[in-house]
Image (cartoon, rainbow, N blue to C red; front, side, top):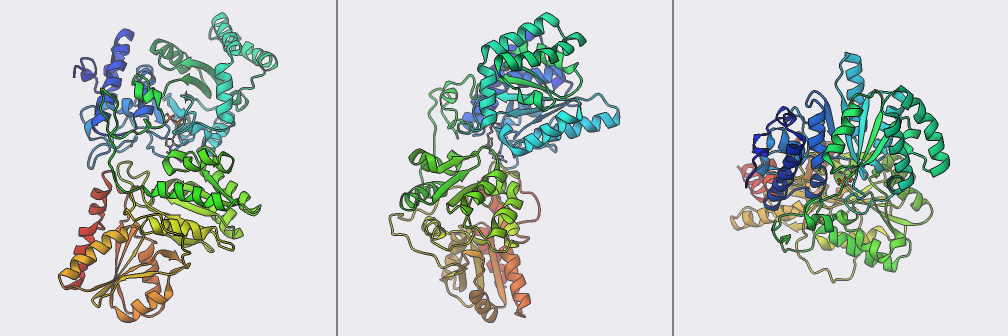
Length: 620
Ligand SMILES: Cc1ncc(C[n+]2csc(CCOP(=O)(O)OP(=O)(O)O)c2C)c(N)n1
């Protein structure tokens, strides 16, 4: 592949030597490079294609890495990585031992702030701008935030603080008119209005051209703002928050971007530049179906054909289908997702029952308290949040739901190690952080039937707050056409009996444990294997029986070792004076990076082989 210019760019200085004509060529090469690389090694394609010109312009105008660019979420930073020394390594993107799919401060000095979770950029940039001022430095801080990420509460907190502080920061709103799914909310509508109000924008441009960039213009801007509001009835949210607003401009027009950024660089104070881009820009399949091509998996670059692996239904689909089935029978059921309808399959209910399933935007805290409100009024909300994003809404679960003992069903998708998204996205902590909350029932299904039955059980009258956590990926392939059965709260299952030691597992990792136990059985090593199912309330009958029968217990969980099932079991045995040696398998007390789920489970020692070896070692 001819990458004549791109192959010469290893740092931002290299790029600053190019002419504007060459910058355009460079953008084309970067785009082609991303399309090619992602076809072989999957990643977040659409968002990265949309900001190629913006990335080139930012590194051209600002003195990165001294000036700080903070990419919100960070899934759109591929061009940034490729242009700042990671082109050669890019084929290892998201692979085990390779570079991260998100900005990472330990990976490059150009990654000013680590990313993965949404809506952090304004606060981080404000912190950097404030520090620069305190240090007497003229380093610039630039937050690049998407229209989707702008729906997150944290972004508003940052804007609110920044606008009033008069700090010197630039917020670039990368408006591609879509989140992963359709963008939702009033801010989205405001962006649409301001973008499509031709009269307003023509008026603003004329004013800019007429007065130029000087003090008189700033004075005139105040006068003009009043006229704008009166004549065009567009109240600018950013201006209300104390920012000077510029745009909207075409985010694929590199000359215009450079001109505008150069002007803004000289301007003190909090500023917003509103940039219009197209998600998937330059690759037709990705432009045409932006949700599917957000992270498309591998594909044929020429034909746009995507290759997905056949397998049993994914847990997320079992959730989505089952919820529709239950909601058809129970009119109290409603569904809630903070911006992940396709990711968690609530889109199935949104299509069938649009009035009863809600995408509330990237707003986990709100999703939980909104669910609480619904529950107080007699509805039964199924609030689906990825485990790692639920970290955002911890207090809402405690204060707004558990404390009031509300019948809300929290479905935590992507619980456990999630693979290629890495440390920011692993659902490592939910078992530990929810175990200590009173009133909660915490359940993890070992297969799709268990998931279905628990979703069914959770809506029965009088049920408490229930947390159901399940992993990314496929179930075990059981026939789902079976009548629902109520699951007894707090009851474990004995899967295999044996005398040597007891193995306690929770959730789908129990299937790996069962395979290891079966291998050991063939070798004449008898292990008693319990699928605990509930972390809370834990089955104390089973734990007493285990405490009486065994001196060695191994616990296995797809969650952090500190504070989860292993901790619960060890505390129980100590508190009840059982002399039991507990070996705990799970996610160790460090951040686990990216790779396939299989690679990461092996690294942590709780894949089938790891469990097998641990039992063998305990047997010695
Ligand atoms: C706290 C949090 N919730 C949900 C997500 C999942 N997520 C990743 S990207 C994304 C959409 C972001 O939309 P936008 O900011 O408009 O960026 P675009 O992908 O359109 O470029 C979402 C919801 C996340 N990363 N963090």
